[in-house]
Image 1 (cartoon, rainbow, N blue to C red):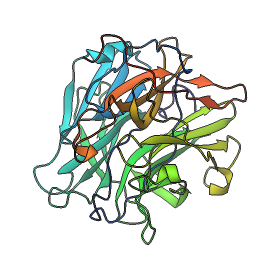
Image 2: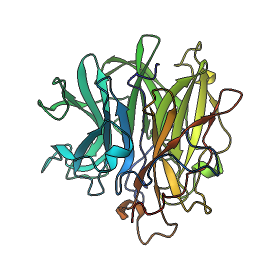
Image 3: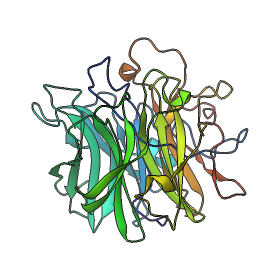
Length: 356
C-alpha cells in the first residue's frame, strides 16, 4: 500500500450493545498514531468540532477530503481543502441522508471515502429505522470525478458470514489484492465486536473466507463493553499496521495495534501479532479523553504521516456517551520508532484559542 492508496483511515463510537439490545456487537482492530509527547502539534486542534469517527483522504487532485459521523446520526457529510487546517473552515455538503423508513434509516455511523477503479465509494454503518440496533455495513458509489457532484448510488449491504451487528468497514489493497476490514459480533461469542478481514470481489462484495484477526481479550479492551472496532491500516517499513479502538466510547476508549509482515499471508490470523497494551489513550495532562476511531493521512509535504482521530475535552459524561456530541476531529504527526514501528505518543493538547 502506498501513501496514495485508498487505505488511510478508520473511525469509533458506540457503546454498542446498548444494554443487551445490540444482539452481538463485535468491534474492530487496534489503532496507530500520534506525535511525540510534549511537542506541540503543527495543526489547529480540535480540527473539526462535533465530528466523530473522522476519515481524511488525500486525493491525487491535491485536495484533502473529509467525512465523519455527525452527532445526529442522520446524514453523510463531505468537506475538502488543499490543506489539513483548511478543513476546519471548509464548506460542508450533505451528500446523502438517511431513509425515512426501512433500511439505512437510523444510526448513520463512521463513513469512509475511498477512490477505487476510477469511482468514489463511501462505506458506512446504518440500521433500519424500525430496529435501530440492527446495524450493518452499506456502500455508496459515485462515478463522477468530483464527489460533490454526480449521483451517489446505493450499492447495498456488504454481506458477511452472519446477519449480526457489524460496522466500521475500511478497505485497502496490498500487492494487488483488495481487502475489507471491519468489526462484527460473532454469534455465540461473549463480546460485542471483533475485527475481521476478507478479500473482495469488487468494492461492495466479499469473496472467499472471512477471518477473525482480533477479539477483546485484555482488560483495557473490555471496559464497559467488550469491543474491538474502527480498524485502519498503514503500510510502512516492510509491515502492515492495523489500528483499532477498544472499550466503551467514554474516556476508557483507546487504541490498540495489530502488526503483520508485508510478505506474510494476511488471511492467516496467526501471522498477525497484537500489542498487549494500548498504543493511544486518554491523557490528563493534555486533557484529551477517549481518543480513537482513527485513520491516517499525509501532510502537505507528501511525506510526513499524520494521525487522524477523535477525542473529547472532558472526562465526565452525563448519560449515554453516544448521546454526547462533543467528540471532535483531531490531527497530529505520527512518529516512527527506530525499530520501524509507529510512535503514537499522546493526544496533544488543544491549540490555544482553538475550539472555543
